[in-house]
Amino acid sequence: MTSPAPPAPATLPLGDDALILSHRLGEWAGHAPVLEEEVALANIALDLLGQARALYAGLSDLLGSEDEIAFLREERAFRNCQLTEQPNGDFAHTIVRQLFFSTYQQPLFAQLSPVLPLAAKAVRETAYHRDHAEQWTLRLGDGTEESHTRTQRAADTLWRYTGELFQPVEGLEVDWPGLAEEWHASIGDVFARAGLTVPAGPSEGAWSAGAGRQGLHTEPFGLLLAEMQHLHRSHPGAAW
Amino acid sequence: MVTASSRSASFAALAGAVPDPELPVITLAELGVLRRVEEPEPGHVLVELTPTYTGCPAVEAMAADIEQVLRSAGAAQVEVRTVLVPPWSSDDISAEGRRKLAEHGVAPPRPGARTADPGPVLLGLSPTRHTTEHARPSAPEPVRCPHCGAADTELLSRFSSTACKALRRCTACQEPFDHFKEV
Image (cartoon, rainbow over all chains, first blue to last red; front, side, top):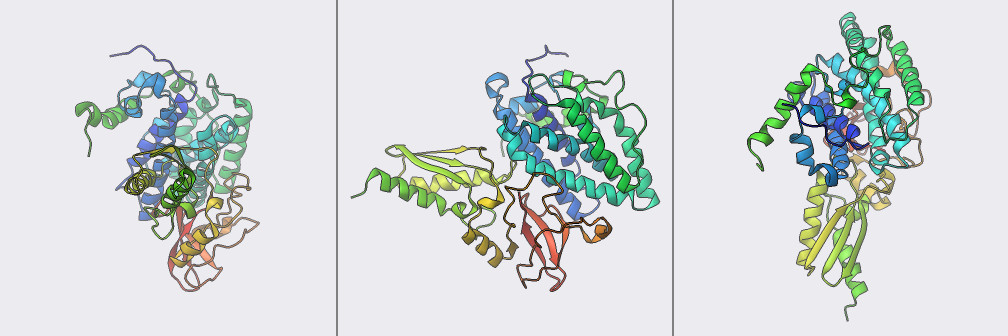
């Protein structure tokens, strides 16, 4: 079933990025390699969920309550970038996804701080997410042969979803080329220190350029939504 | 005689004295999350609250506690709003709040978070024991052990029992402790 594309206000993609990545990180609960990481991933997920709620609250006139926005939209109404919906994979995969995303989100929020209160609020939290992902990338890339191999594989696999991050979002006053340049410089620096190779492949496929921002998603996203939304849809108004 | 302004002031004092739901040793006023307490019309109290972290689940508990306290003090209607501007900073914790945190075994945040550039490098997290080789060149003011006061402490995890705290360990007395992060 497809539904007509709803209006997509400028901050919706930011809220969707936060919600979807928060959900992915929450999937680690009970499965993280060590207790500290269990707590860390849940903490980052909580920060992201808070971002999503604050951003959705600002859209309630257009799109309804935060529950309606999160749980009652169809796949094509979500504007998150495809990077955030990618499955967790192994721990290295989750860390590289977080590094790619937080290295994008933090300077993006810094740029948006003067016009978007949530960005001004969250930018300092995202700095912790970025630092956490960076420290783990160094540890894994520069760790054992196994951890290095897995981290490099994660980078190679996720690279194709990074080009989309810098597709301009209509309505957001952002220096997108500058953001892309800063991102590549930072990732290059972290990878060099971690002994990792910046992937040489394309950072976007012809099929994926800006796709998530237009409501086109990868196959795993439907499964994520099914899990995330089924309780609310099966038991409308359920509370506990 | 109780004037409207003195009533407002007493509502503000009552709201400010509500303990933090997760760190009950310090009050909401000391934590710096109460932005405004007013009585725009008799019996109607408006409270503005700002979250420490965007996703902090304690905000809802804070709002409920404030409402309960003010209602039992005679407010007929209590409205608690969450505001984000200006963003809360760990610099908003009062000196008394910092003292109480340390006394409770939580290393208080180091001052100057608000003026620092919001970058991951400048937040001044020190390297973990696993990554000493990646130590940053300019070490900021150390996080002191709240138990023995030693400056030589190490980061165990950037994220601890709540979003606002990191887990550290003192290398002098070996005790682990929470550190209220600078933000």
